[in-house]
Structure formats: C-alpha cells, structure tokens
Image (cartoon, rainbow, N blue to C red; front, side, top):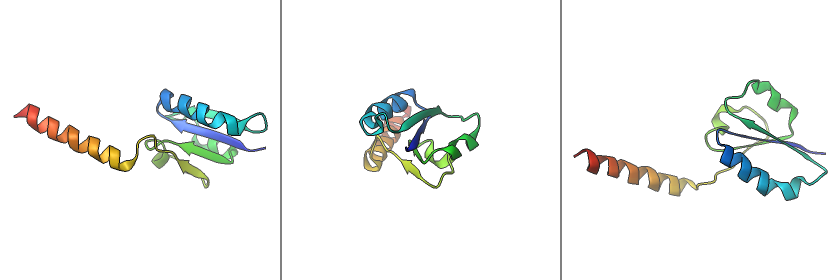
Length: 92
C-alpha cells in the first residue's frame, strides 16, 4: 500500500490532483491533502510520495517530492512578460 500526499496553497490544485490521481489511488492506496502553510511540516515524513505545485515544492523537504506543474514554464514566462508590458503601458 502506497501513502501519497498532495500539498498546495490552492484548493483548486488539490481538487484537480484528487481527480487526476483517483484512478491510480483506487482502494489500495491512500491520498491525503495539505494546504500551505503546514501546521506540522514533519507530518509529510509519513508519506511515500509527496506531490506539490510550483509554489509549495520549494518549501517542502521530502526525498520523493514530485513537482506538478499545471502551467508549463514557457507559458508562465509568457504571462509574466505580458503582465510586465501591460504594467508599463498602463503606467505611462
């Protein structure tokens, strides 16, 4: 039996992860969800695998941490550039 956890600041991410992982988890494995900030970061030690989003992953220390990106880095960079250029245009 595998014990998995999902960590995020976003309830939407946790809901998405729950939906995506449900078929693999089935009844043989367990899945626990945690929202940041964690009350007790050492609680994650009990899990075999920890899935985390891009915001949560730098804050987590676990040997089997899997960072899950809902947005690809190239898309994120594009959004950042667009927002910066928008800020320049609107502040002029």
